[in-house]
Length: 262
Image (cartoon, rainbow, N blue to C red; front, top):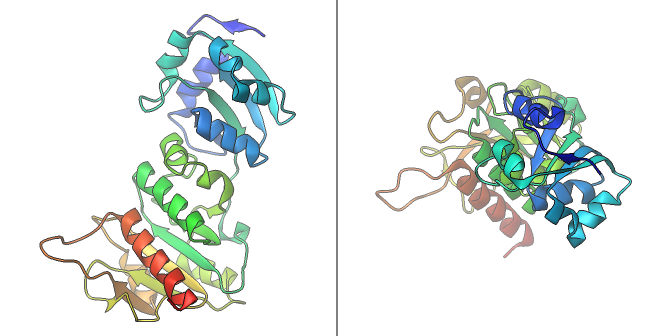
């Protein structure tokens, strides 16, 4: 295998470019995320490893996988110049991860879907995806203005969930509800104030589209106008709101608890 020794290498240049663009190409960083992609059956177009990483058990497994294309070694100090500060040691891989509109979401009887409105923080998006997968949601629908699900930090914060969970982009509520019309989901908003108390409301029972906005802006007026119901998590003062991913976790686990009849 070739050892990359120059900052001008085409793969290193590609990494820098991918950090400035969002599209169907996903930049995967760190041992956990790269290995999760391979386990999920995604094809890695190329993989960059340090010589030491290539000799590990997981490195040898990746190098021998039919799902991995080009494999190249890179000096650790060069890899550190293109990796994110949160994972400065790599490895780094590229995979094609196309994202489509709401028509790409599976229609699951009794399913729960998250409608995410203008979530701009990639860490929050990744955490939301992780919570959604942990609570058996069928998919995510991201409105225009959301951070792209292939953002490197969103992928990493999801711990692999954004590699597996269907995520539709440029989603509009009308199109989402039309796509899911055969299961007849309720559109319920999670609001910081003014909604029905979450516990015991029954608002999250059955097929559901749960709408969440960013902690600062909340849901857009157009989405609020279409809601069937709105629910609120009661908080002890002086706390006024929760991080959107934390709020989603509370609501979704309450939904599962109620479904079990606990």
